[in-house]
Length: 248
Ligand code: CA
Image 1 (cartoon, rainbow, N blue to C red):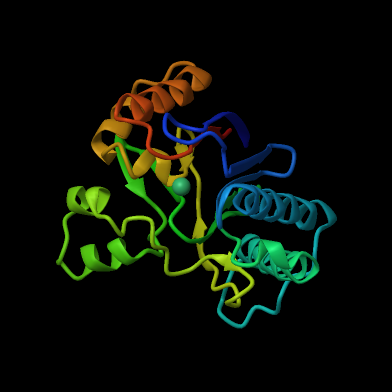
Image 2: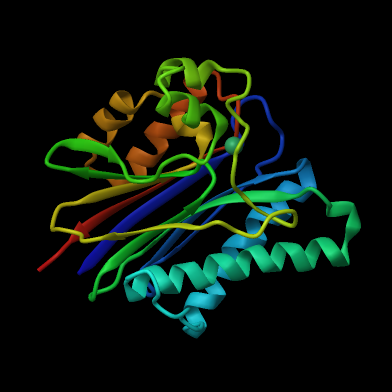
């Protein structure tokens, strides 16, 4: 399986710092987007620390938690990496109390020949483009997503809501990480998008789908999505990571 990818990140038009982080390691099949919270410096540290820890655990192979839920190997490797990222944030907060309250979302994809998996905590998303349809693979861990599920808000209302940034799960020092995992079987021609809410919190899915559908050059597509989010005001940091799967 060959993976082509491109990524772009931008602070947006209203913030001076960028608290998003991402990693792309096609040699490991690992792709991660994280969106830090907790104020300028702390948010940057949280998202960087999470991404670096997830990467280093996957590099070293980590240890796979016992499979008591019928999870695949790829899911268990991501679970271990995400849980250690949560622990790294706990440890760093203990060492530097001024960082108390820092937290980050993380959404990751592990692509292997034996099967792939998605893991996430928070409201950064993974989308799959297949058969000309864009499907959100992750369920936002956020207050507005819960209201949408209950039928109390529409997706458009959620994007405008004053509480749209309230996440119900994150990697932080205050709660043990509750990582949501799902297996994924990729096909030739699949495209995946990992994004922070500076993109999907501003641009509707059907508009994102048009860019993903028309993608020729992956870097141009990432830049187009950043331009679209900034064109809509760019209220938040924006990160986009697009993959294209070429399977034999
Ligand atoms: Ca954000």
